[in-house]
Image (cartoon, rainbow, N blue to C red):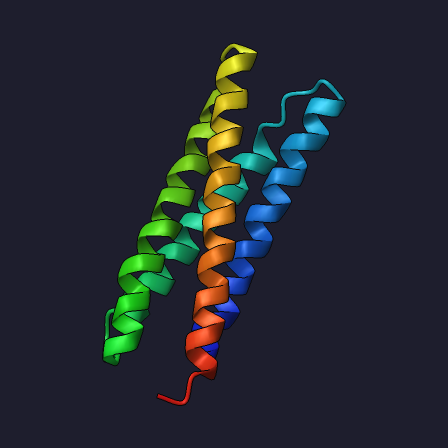
Length: 125
């Protein structure tokens, strides 16, 4: 469980950095390309490692976390790839803004799940 929480914190940190990078690029009116693509690839690798481990030898409570949180992480990675694609292709600004909004929604959902994970980890049931 502790290793899982460590990787989960890394994922949240990476999502936060991505959002900050996008916000900064908008302020500078630049289109980031390589850093966002590399970060997106790193997040996908992290998700694969995380979900693969959680599927093996998990208790009933951890399996519920895998199903719920795994879906949230997968959706976040999809949202990241969508946003990166829109930025690197030079899609109209409103499309990129919609993609960024979707990513921020996913990030919020992951933060909520993190609170649930912490509560379950502290629960002596």
